[in-house]
Image (cartoon, rainbow, N blue to C red; front, side):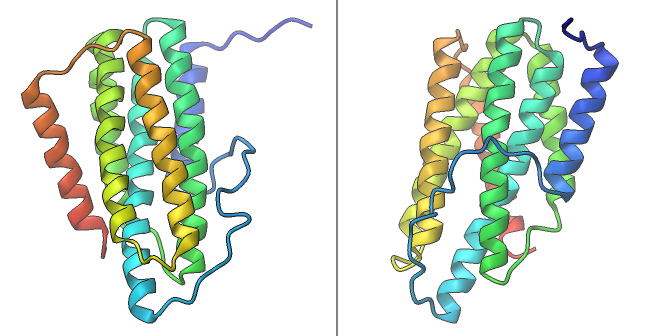
Length: 214
């Protein structure tokens, strides 16, 4: 049986479909077990639920941005191995998206209304990173994941101790992000200039501040 070869237009349409699913629907998952499948739900006060929902809303929007970044980078990647690295990371980010969305529903909350706006911005940034070259694109991926790992560690410190479900999800997300950063570095990621890292942190803070309640 002959393998189908996809044209650039085919890849573009597939990424468009992935983007729509990421922002508005339920993207395909890898089939990994839910990290909180065997975790018992704790007793949460209204204040606990509100805090957890706000943090998980930020995490969900962060995963929407991650999808857009990887899609932009995958579209512009020159090397097939780099493109595969981006695609594998994006597939696991789909799991994170689904877990965060499900947790928000369990907390009787919702995703951010700003998700589409941040998706478009991140897609543009990812495309520019890819156009700069594969080493820089991988460097951008590695730095993004390092910053996300630190961000998730801060959320683990803030989540209510009794919210074992959210904590299990965020812990798995953090471990995945750290692994993505390591994979990018092993594939030849370039070290980003300090001003670029600072700008990335500023953008992340802006997203965090606006999506927690909106």
